[in-house]
Length: 194
Image (tube, rainbow, N blue to C red):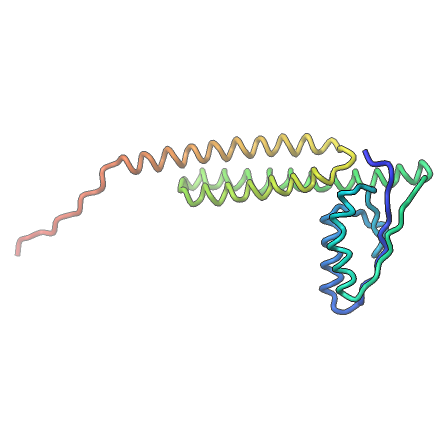
């Protein structure tokens, strides 16, 4: 568990807004917690410094400037506030993954079962959605520096989704194999009379 932090204070030109939004999005993706506008805190980890390098370049390329400031020997209450902020951020991301699994992924499979849409194409689409959720989980897990309990619930949901997907794929395979084994319908003969 990280015990030291550093602060990123940056400024970007007001226009164009796309540059400011891009930096904000990248810093959130790296795992920064915003203390206020243009002020982020990060655990002081070598991997984070590497991850930040392209974002810092983007700030400079966009005509901005920044300061990286180490935070050493924080009072205990401030340390606790920072850890709590990172834990809350990770918990929120895991909750969003759980919601995606429950509301979107599970319902999609239920709907396709209801429609009896057992095609290879549909199975591939659903697998691609599952893989997106897994990648999202991995990004969140890598930034969960303080191990929040929601991680376990998200892992349970991923396991549930994987089982649902495997059952759906098995059903698709069975339906497709049975379809291939059925004799092709014979063409109807036209009435030759007349």
